[in-house]
Structures are given as C-alpha cells and as structure tokens.
Image (cartoon, rainbow, N blue to C red; front, side):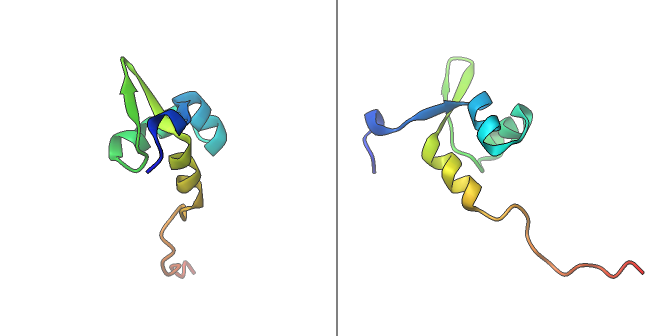
Length: 69
C-alpha cells in the first residue's frame, strides 16, 4: 500500500472533469461507495488511483437487448 504522502488527491471538480461527468455524479459515486474518498472539512478528495480504476471498469452491465419490434 502506498504511503499517504505518495497519494495524489483530486477535488470533486477535477474528478468530474477527468471522468467527463457532472460534479453531482461524482458525489453520488462517493456516497454510494463506488468511488472511495476522504473528507476534508466540508469537501471531499478522491485518490487519483481510484479515478483511474473507476475509468477501467465497465460502465453498465451488458445484458441481453430486448427485441422492441
């Protein structure tokens, strides 16, 4: 496990920019536990490595596509 001094933390706005989603989406990911974060006062910081891992995961579960018509 890397030393805390070696971890780069990003703001919610920075994470949103990297992931190309809204800040609200980042907050939802943090609150659901899908994206680990630590809280500094009233703001959150997300480890850069967690963002990289999240970007490697599939976005949606690929199931069968329903035949519409």
